[in-house]
Image (tube, rainbow, N blue to C red; front, side, top):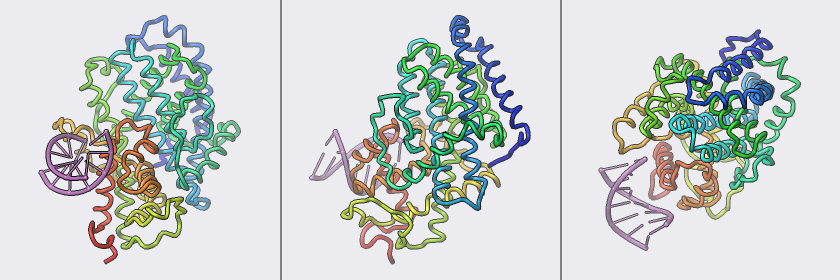
Length: 401
DNA sequence: CTTAGGG
DNA sequence: CCCTAAG
């Protein structure tokens, strides 16, 4: 997971990063962005970049700290890391879409653009523990996150607050990670900094996204050897079709998430054949509904296992389910098949434990309000799959055979 | 309209 | 994921 390719170049890395960003800003000619726009936002962007750097470093530090130091790895740490990663993934995901959208019609989509971004950010913050929601008042969804998210709150807060201090001393992450984080926070910053849908912020964001895309592409290349995207081709066919194809790329990226769940499930099955044990998780669930079946085991298994599986899978081999995206493309019937990353599964399980199984709409509205995809039916299907994977018999007793 | 079940 | 039947 941590390649630490630029381990010692910590400080210089920052500079590089900044320079790169600058560079990007300097030559957005690839896009059909008008020069005026570039000039106008160039200055602001610079300052923004700095902020981003700070943030990213601090952020990354938090990650690295939790992930790297096994000695101090508590469930909370795991959760934190997980959430953060998921947040990043989600963010990237959303951003990709946004970017694509921008590419095809950056002129008119401004509002939607921003809205989406805000949403994404919102979601991320929720995942992280919604530390500061003052920036935008549109936080329509109150995170219901019970125990898991709650635990991560403190950790995240720490990492953020202490970001400035450690940013220069402890930046030991690969460029990719940093970049991702950079983008993430770039959005955050841009959002918080410029509430109104200014063209500046939009452009800046899109640019950052572009850069990110490139890097992501690189990552994908490294990981899977699939050459998918460049920065410019994006403009070519700005059809919806393209967007879908484009998102395939991120699917690659998201596969990690899938991996999590896969590993988790496997482990759950292996280690805990029965769902009896639910001691670790404090489920604020209603006693009525908590009579559920295989859910508890999953919930408790998720945080720890998925991390482990993540490391193993990612480090050892990077892929197996490259098929998913391809098939999805072939048959328009099955749209995209968004992979369920662990955090989503957790949210789902939480929601079920909270509102009871069958209340898919409620769960969707309350816990997945930020996820445009994921219809209530999807939730139900996922749950069904989880049950099946858990080897739970549907009728009779719940798998306690 | 939402849920459950099957494809 | 999609579709359909049933509440």
